[in-house]
Structure formats: structure tokens, C-alpha cells
Length: 89
Image (cartoon, rainbow, N blue to C red):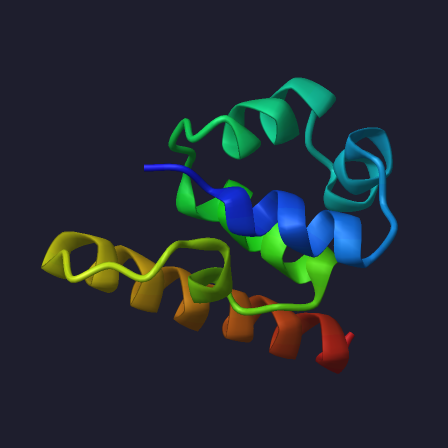
């Protein structure tokens, strides 16, 4: 699986890999790995999605895999909770 969507979203926002990494609080290598199609934890996807201003599901190509759908839904729920918590602070 590739996460070309991450690269496309990053480029659409005129961000370098370094800028996205800094904004997401992850390493540049993590961004490189994601864009190369390597998997990551839900928390990493949450950080990147939040920095790009999208839902976690938007980072993934369209898939029929039930396992991926569950992972995406869980990540989206976790992201919404974290955003709500930040707003409350």
C-alpha cells in the first residue's frame, strides 16, 4: 500500500517533508517512510492528519479491506477526541 495521499496533501499545502515533520512532531524519516508506503501507528497517522487538517481516512487510498476500515475509523475517532481535548484546554 502506498500513502501517496500524504505526499499530495503535503504538496497541496506547499509544505516540505521537513516542515510537515516539524508541524506533526515526528521525524523527517517518518514522513519519508509514510510517503514510501510503510505503515505507522495510529498516533503517528493522527499527528500527520491533524497537521494536514484532514481526517486520518483521507491519508489512505480507497480500500475495501475491513481491517483497514476499522483502523481508519479508530484513528479518526481518536483524532476527534484529541482535537476536542485541545479545544477544551
